[in-house]
Length: 418
Image: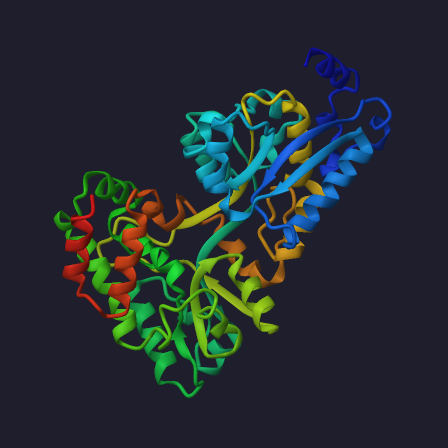
């Protein structure tokens, strides 16, 4: 390891020369060939994988260091811990950035010192860096990329056809219901909203957090006090209202991505989703949509308003026992910043990870205006994902929204899960 460190120092540290996410080709003849072992959360036929492969080829050409990529897909979340516990040699892996810190943190190295050499933190969106350091107790355990912002995306053409304008963008729950009613009684022939069952936790998580705040959501989960918090029942009643009124399409909650595809087929107007949603809809249905965006609305007497948004990212982590920490960092840095960051952004219409890449894709550009207004960053589903009974919670949400149980039964069943 000392040998490699001295070589990197002799090159003035490759990471220092990684301008705009690229590795200087002049280094390639000076570093002997070796390999970084990288377990990826992507499938090898996904657009992100193509960018990563190109980055790995460029890295090897410039440094002589190959990147051995093992495409694990989303199952990496359950595979990585057992593999590392068993002594598997892995230098670098990626996953959801929150799960990276909170569940995989025991395996990861603090990147603060390595990152300081290239002033990496200036490239990270402040709202993401704040979360990472809070979860990691001031450690930099992950390098975020492909960020997302979560809110209501809508088909602007259908919105306008129904007689709605920017003045109708709802900031409150009551105004949101009025918008749903206007869409429902219009002659556009589309449901106001649609939801896939996989994202029901977003609906309920947002609504509950609006009433009590994310910290209280965490306390409810930890202390199992669902039946002691009136706002939890109210949030369940609110979400159920969207379904029994017909504001949600008849197929909701649908199997992913059948529901959200209704937006592309002009069978529904709005859906609550992460910023990857518009691209998924357009890819799946081969449509071209003018997208609008607004945060989930506030509620009467709620703790939080529209300043609270679910935002997050994927993240790279470097294992604590890796002997190639610097090399792995340099490779990850080349993806999280500069040109490769924009390649991922363009490939999947995502939010740029590098704070210095200011141009958002047109499909999600309207959401960029809300970043400056975001004062509270929610976790995914406002923390509902942290519940050790999240699968049971999901089943209950399906029953609630299919009108198979009352809000009171829903809360009672949650109270009996722990």
